[in-house]
Structures are given as C-alpha cells and as structure tokens.
Image 1 (tube, rainbow, N blue to C red):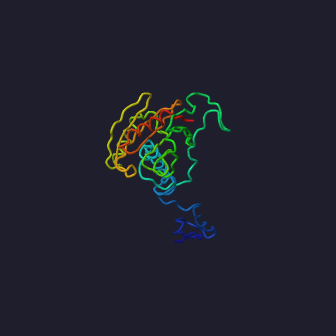
Image 2: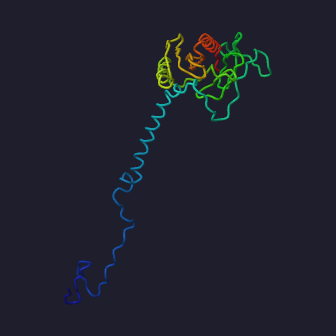
Image 3: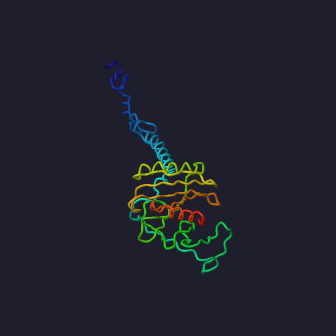
Amino acid sequence: MSTGGGAHWNPQSQRWEWADQPPPPPPRPPAYPPRPPGDGPGGWGGPGRERSWKVPLLVALGAAVVGGCAVAGWFVLGDGEPKAPTAAPSAPGTPVPPSGTGPQAAPTATASSASPSVPPPYTVVRDDGGFSVAVPTGWERSHDEDGSGSFYRRPGDRSALVQIFRVTEPDGVGACELLRTSSQDLGKRRPGYQEVSLDPVPGGSCELVYEYDNQESHGRRRAIERITVAPDGRRWALLAAGPAADGTAVRANLTAAVESFRPE
C-alpha cells in the first residue's frame, strides 16, 4: 500500500516507509543458540542434575563400605579349606633368640614388650605382623590360608592351627558382641556347627569355644578364640584349633599363645 510522497506500508516491518528511507537491517541472530528446556545447571538432563545424583550415591556407597568393614574381619576366620595365596608371602615367623644374644639383640624397655621364656614344647616366634607369640616347637608360618592375620601350623599337617589377627572394630563394640556375631556367621557357613561356650574374660576380653565338622581335622574340629587387650589398648584375636578329640592340646596351645603374646 502506498500514498503520495513515495510513502508505502511495509508488511514485513509493519510500518510506513518512504522511498528515500533505507530498508531496516535484517534481525541479527542471537549470540548463542536458544537453550532447550532441561539443559544447563539444575536442568533435567544437564550437568547439574548429574551431580545432584552422583554425590549422594558416593556418600551412600561409602557408608555401606564402612558399615560392612565393621564386622568383615569376623566372617573370614581362617579355619576352613586352604586357598592359593594371592600375593607373595612375607617372611615367616622366626624363633626369637634368647635375650642378649644375636647381632641385633637390644635391651627391652618394659616387661610387657619382653619376649617371654616358655617351656617345651613351645617356642616364641617373632611375626612380621607386629608381635611375638609362642607356638608349638616346629610349627611354621603358613601362607596357604583362607582368612586374615597370621597362621601357624605343623609343616605338612593341617589338622591343627594357631591364628592371630588385629581387631580393627571400634572399641565401642564389645569383645563378646564381636564373638557373638562371629558365632552366628560361623553357624551359617560351617557344617555341624555348635557353639560350646561364649564367656567374658577378666581384663575386657572374651572367649568363644565352638566345634564343627572338618575334613582337615579328620572329623570334628574344636576351636577356641580369645579376644585380648594389649597394654597399649589395642585388641587382638588369638585362635587355636585342632581335632575335637584332642581338645586338651587345643586349650594348651591357646593358653601358651595368650600368655606369651607381645605386640611390638
């Protein structure tokens, strides 16, 4: 539509224009393409949404791992069938020389850290796990085990054992509570399991006695597990096991281990 003077209506710009007026510049494209809904921080599919799920998920997983570790050590007691070692074994426990002998002998600072003198048939060995303990003479560190800590057996004979490992659960979890949890789990995993006794021991310790069917011990195996508190407050578990028919030897092995045990 046009009028006198060269004016006309521009339907694209929706305004009147004159012949001598330059046409309006075309609209400039936006500096950035429009962002579709859901993109960007906090959007349905953007990075913000991804982070909002990842962080709680990691926290939840971490909590589950910590909770599982609280009792994991009590579900791998090494009195089952052997397995191949997954790493190169460390040096076996070695007999402790008498005090004052040997090129590296050094005076002990306190009686609690001194290597005790034990009568036959026991010998005190120093373990690279950070302790010394008495085991039956001739027994050696075993690395072909399914369990945690250090194991000692008579070479070529798997009918009996002595096991020592650190208790890493919080002090707020009582010794008898830990052994009760262990007993419940063993009842699910060991054929013919029977809890004989579970009793507290003076000094914040506790002891579990149990039996189960075991091929290594040629029938029934008896195990005695004692949680003991070291002078520095750390807790350790000591276990002796062997044929149930030879329960007197099992008890003697545990007694020798408990009375001679010295953490370093």
